[in-house]
Image (cartoon, rainbow, N blue to C red; front, side):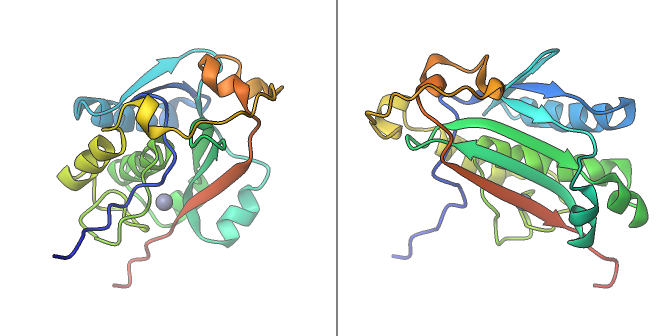
Length: 203
Ligand SMILES: [Zn+2]
């Protein structure tokens, strides 16, 4: 029997919930809120929007914007996780210059935002095009397979899922100020950058 490879990363949050701070202007705030509402409606993970610092930060245009544009990235997620496999903080943003240049509709921008939030929860790219986690998603929103992948990633209780560690270094990174106690025990050791490239009109 062939085993299905589940497109999830080994890292995740403690439990299927995370706080979110939205730092974008009114238009993109509406885009991200639609994406958050869509995920929350699936009842497998709860994004809680805060007015202050949070585990997930939705950022406006960044200093490296020009470089992201050069690489044709329309969205990007920076996921920090520690040696126990816990996600410590996430930064995501959409690259307006390219979304505008390639005339992504608002709904298509919401789809890309849903994709970035997928990375924020711990989802990896799905080779199947009928998934919001397909690497160049534009037209596809959250699919049943995406919902079941989040469910799968969070199916084990924390005590069984995370790696025991003796690391006790206290991080001074202010991004983790409001994270749970466990997140303050270890330093950031790794960062992944997940990007969505432009889907051009040519296919
Ligand atoms: Zn991606």
